[in-house]
Length: 138
Image (cartoon, rainbow, N blue to C red; front, side):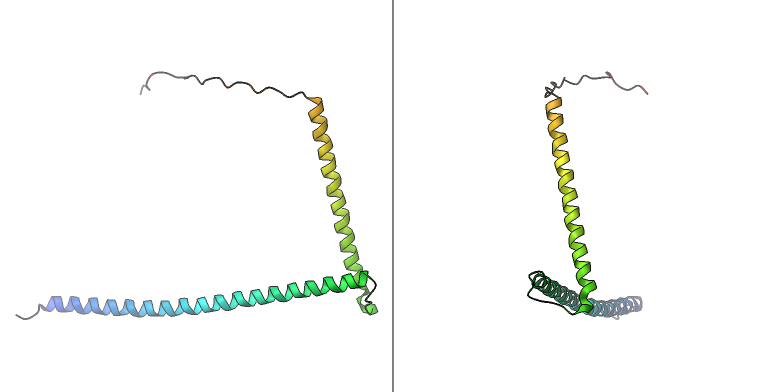
């Protein structure tokens, strides 16, 4: 018995659609793999950049400590950087002092409130009562 021509045409269309879907899936898989590799490379670059910046910070701290201890002097061209660091440290110190003052004032205010008001006994919760009884009328 010969195959029905309509079934053969439908099977051919199904096969073509399946092959097209497989091709698109393969392209998508390649794109995902490429993007994954790019993301890994980008992540590694960011990690290396952060590590470099951390190393620069550590070097700067070591140099600054050596300068403060008098073991190292920098050429005159670095005076503006040293002045900026000193100003930043002074600003941070002033800010910390302000915070300390604010916290102390808050503690003093809390102590005054404790002394000014005797503790209030908590009231016992009353059982809730039903406000509306019966069924709704429509």
